[in-house]
Image (cartoon, rainbow, N blue to C red; front, side, top):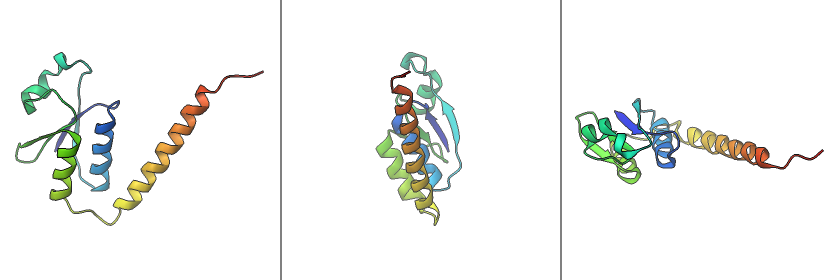
Length: 108
């Protein structure tokens, strides 16, 4: 599997999280910010939208909903999926708390 995505895209993060929960190996392909520069993505998927998943037989899924539906149909959920989900929730909460502290005004 090849996932065309960016780190700043929330939908890409959710797809990566689901792949992790399902214990599915994949290759990440970083996509340029500017749509006009997404030549490789367009050639591989016929779309300039992310996330996009190129599957084992070359079929393409574009968009979070379509990708997540495909993954849930194709891969059974392993025993450790819930532990991954809970860990991700905890990590995101901690990240948000740290970001909020960075925004607090400095007092002397």
